Length: 304
Image (cartoon, rainbow, N blue to C red):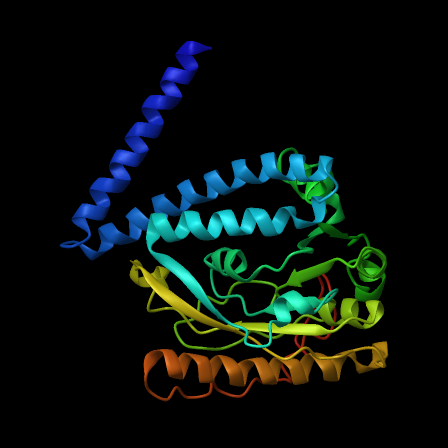
């Protein structure tokens, strides 16, 4: 056992030393900064994950399990700030993050760095959503269960309403908010844009009768752009938009709700990016459809 610990200690020391060397080289070799912050991000993720397992267990014991993900997110926020010099500044003058509960929070999805955005904006009594099948996954599933994640049953991948039924019940009975990325995947775009929206988040909000709270981040390709090996320090602006009520809406309203919300978010992303860059940014080309995925699940197609 002691030999294993010594081996892990040597590997950890070498990892940290390599990260520091790359940071020193980054003043002359920009690509070194990319790998330095990449390695530092993994360190921050390990720190936050370890902290998350411990704090989730303790908070669960004392009856506060539903703030576990908030606590873990904040840990990651500070670990990333000290390790990479990157953070998100949150514009929320009406404090909608903390006063709107329960709600379905949604945001644009650019890169893996959005995990840090969650670390900076994540409200208390909120969780990410996860497939119900992940419950039995070692470590990840255990953490999600301990931290009171809202699980979605995707056994019928073509019926968004059926998949969201259990999650909607949990939101209303436990007053637990959720955070979702309606694009469904990362865009990795150099300029501000949004991929077509999937409708799961909107079905969930309508079924639960809770507001949708959009959160938008400016395009941050000046901070992280993988294709150019760019990973710099910086502060990325994000904004919490006014909650959108869904109480009187029906499933037949979901398409319009998703489309209108997407258009609102895209305008705000353009405005936020323009302000951050100090010059106007053009709107992206018009979508070939209405920007909403026609179905939910593996067989989804873009509406035309």
